[in-house]
Length: 474
Image 1 (cartoon, rainbow, N blue to C red):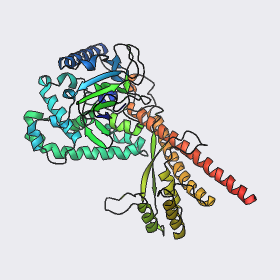
Image 2: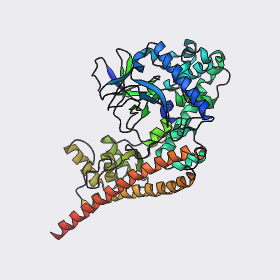
Image 3: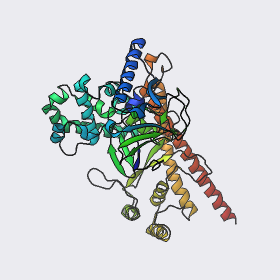
Image 4: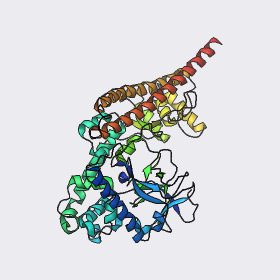
């Protein structure tokens, strides 16, 4: 839909929305229920009144804030047709990192991320309280302790996903937040009149997880928080995205389907696997069609052709990762997705991963020279076609299969442990364990992907074996 309305439109992936769904995807447990519901309805009513008071009538013309089983959500106030603009907000409603007080901006050291700046904005406005011009919106954000992002998981909960990439990515995110807090702490201490005296690492982490939107299009990256828009819930099958007009400085959402009055309206946060949803939003989806698995492949340090293979890989644009000490790891990570059919072309298993396996299986400089020459004769991409030697191609595919089966074994053990941790989740709401259920979704999704990839590999090298046998008979 980019470019339909004129101006310079960019697709926006909004991640500020832990508030949208992650406050409690599985449960919305409150006590006493009636009192809390009344408070929520009052906050929502004040928020809509606040929007209209700021002249954002286009935001409220077709949608209103309500409560779903997943927390706050947006609902159609009238029938909506596919292709219809359901929401438009002006740039005045969009929160950007430069809206921090100038005193703070001047004190911040270089290198403080925009996400951290947005977290500081939230902390400053929370300190002001009712006097903040953003108070009606901030009251609708998830309260402290309500987020389920993996950065808040306990050590034993993280152990449930120790074989998933979300484990490493969570540790990295927590390290980044810790470094960011250490960087801004002197500013917080110098500005108690802006932030108060009680900003801790925990409160900063909560603000960091709540505030901010990753926005990306055509290589552009910037951050913003868009009130009202971030109350949209995510639907993995939805095609509606937030678009931003840089010239007119406004954000828009166009419906991708018809909605009846009273129906919940969705957008897509992107084609995101559960690992990213769990880390960035604090929720997961059962049977997420966009699940993926990170697969590491690396050269052995004992391989006598290691240097030659690395040179060949690098020459043809296949980088390998460096260790923190600058040494070459000899490997890289590849993301695989579910392979829909074992008799297809293996869509979901990256060609680069298959190529890497073919290079790993080379046992002579002659083979490496041939791989480089073949790449030169075609499109320059290395080992993207099956090897001419059926036995070598089978060897490469068996290498991949062994890696997949190893991951399947690890994930299967984790699934059994998670099942044990999830016992009792079907009992009373108070005993539900949303983090365990999220871990279950992550591991189950990755297992589904791995099983599909392994099945395709088995079929592929079985076909090669049949072909080799036929040639031998002839």
